[in-house]
Image (cartoon, rainbow, N blue to C red; front, side, top):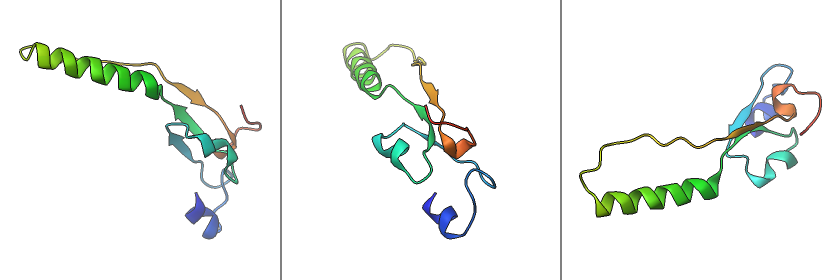
Length: 83
């Protein structure tokens, strides 16, 4: 975002920007950043639980684990107001 602004590329009029993780400063940037909020605490818990399961049962089949996330819409994507 800093580079785009330095190059004179207007956000979001010319280029829309979306991030991931919804870091604490995302809403404080010069143009508040639209971002995908991830449940970091849940990610850590599930990762530890899965690792322990694998250590206790090395023959477990490979599995996919999905956790919910939510889109936090802010001005960097062209939204009129922050959420």
